[in-house]
Length: 418
Ligand SMILES: [Zn+2]
Image (cartoon, rainbow, N blue to C red):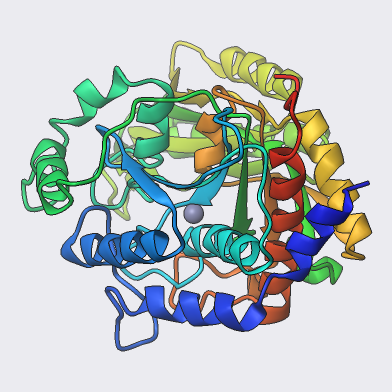
């Protein structure tokens, strides 16, 4: 049960202030269709940073950056203990909406505003992190800033990555650091906890009619590439029995995998065959070679391992199977999850349990400190789209639950057990 101070912090959250700030952030890189184009380290994103830094200063916060241009907005605690951290990202897809990432940062800032308005001091500092390049649309890969934060040696490799104009990340970072020369640089500090608040980007919460979810973890992902070999031949003259049709083989494999997947726990299963290359890809020639990809996601490492075994069994003289990407599932911190439920219960917010199907910065932070997430509903599950929308009441409830959790954690002298 959260204490009275944590509940007072939640009470001080202002829906109006939160919505105003979201609207202000949305001006940077605004598109005529209501969406936003604010890709990582673009002019629009640097302008948004400048606005955010000014705002942080008026709240009496310190602002730090690091080699990968992550921002840390710090509200001091009574003691210089490891901070409790929230936040997300303010970069967007080229035609993104106004909530993906932005909501987590604006809600974090709203928590700091609420604490200031209510005159609440906390034992530990509370920080809002703004992770650089979560979207990965300008520079690959996504979640770059948070991954370089937890593993700084990754940055060395990222520096040479180029955007579509041939600008390297190194150049874009230099420009950013030159724009904000006064920001002190800080290397990765220990953190007491990280809680990211984000829109769900899927339809589950809306369909369940619930305003909030405690996110238990992030699904593991496997990408496979399967190449089926046959013999290209004339579609009219080759009898059915004499064919080595690579497409028939590929279709059989897909149907086998779909049947097997039917036996797996369903709500967390995601199976997608989305990229196909057919050679020679002619209407009247039997396919000689078919390559397709398989994106398989599940939260349970045992299911992922079982699927790996199936994929190995498929391999044959005429079937090559490659695993081209492998990201293990992340389980968020059980003590944090319990506290998130306690806060939402105390605030009378009906809360679901979900597993994230998308990657988030929290995925990387989980290897640095006790980490978890909250989700609010996404209308029709739409995201990476100007039509991204969440009922303001839900945005408000999410920020309240976050304020309660952050304050509660920031007053714990011993912190969460890592
Ligand atoms: Zn995001």
